[in-house]
Length: 244
Image 1 (tube, rainbow, N blue to C red):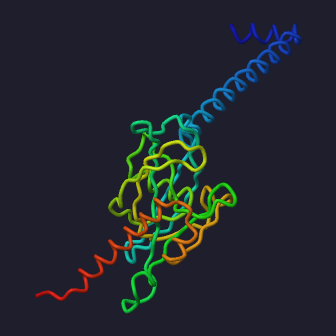
Image 2 (tube, rainbow, N blue to C red; image 1 turned 30 degrees about the vertical axis):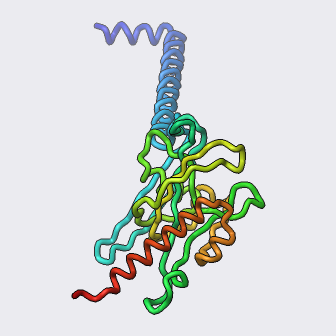
Image 3 (cartoon, rainbow, N blue to C red; image 1 turned 60 degrees about the vertical axis):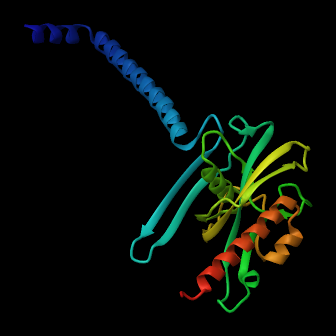
């Protein structure tokens, strides 16, 4: 009965069919448009969650491939350096900064340690301000070790084993005279990246200890370097001693 009724309407009034067809088509297009916009909003939000931190304006995506046979580590790093001071730590008015002295041992055991030791220095952001070790602000959403590793990766593009803290220093910023509380760690470098966040604004170079003392413009960093050399010399002496 209903089939006969519908066929009668179609045959007697074809314009009715055309009208309903266009209504259906318009509704379908509108539904597709709504689905598209919802998908775009969700994808944009999801992308922000994955690749950005809206509070500190950075993203850090780090992936390691580890080959168990030879423990070779191949790193893929895509990251943008943190910016802003929203999460900056302070201690009694001193802005807390954390840095590393990246180092490696070259040569053989017969060499003097200071001759075999090389450290990595980077250029300051402001031209003509010499070289220094990587360092930056310690923020409230990370540990001091995490801050040291992050700053070294962002500014120098190296990674490795973070060793025990060398010390704490209080000094004034040469830029604006503000008070700083600086912490410095040694970093035994295991590898360095060809691309890193501040590659376009900094240079990095491996130098000897005497050369580092000559080019570094930060007295407290030179003191930290002296402490590192003494620590490594002490460790080398202990390892070279024959058991009784």
